[in-house]
Amino acid sequence: MRRGPRRCALLAEASLALLDARLRCGLWPFRRLARHLGGLKPAAAAPGAVPVDPPTAETIRTVRWAIAAAARRMPFRTACLQQAIAARAMLRRRAIGSVLRLGVGDPSGTVLEAHAWLDAGALKVTGYPVDPALAEVGCFVWDPRDQPETSESRTA
Image (cartoon, rainbow, N blue to C red):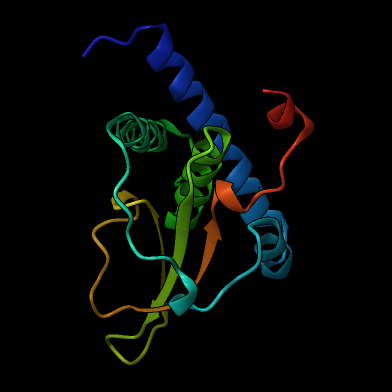
């Protein structure tokens, strides 16, 4: 597949978003990161999967592609939480709501496992497939409809 200017710009945006997420995850305590993401909510507080219109679905799939492609090319390993945060930031810039989910599990009884995954509407964005042994313990929800109206949106 040829990379045109739009795809190159998306890869650059995804790369910068992944770098930003890695720095935040590495430098900030989880409490600060959780505040930045809008506050951790119980898993039950996540909205159900809502179908999205075709243009929005295409944008979500494009962001999913960009994050996956950029993650493979980064000079460091990108963890599931970093990919979910980066994709969430890209979707937010496009006013597309998402749910970043956190799960934990201990299938062997010896090591705690944690995982993060991101949904937008009824679409899977990052972190899939999710191990069914994981228990979802919380989520970060961002819905553009919950955001205060800005002066720009009032004049439009």
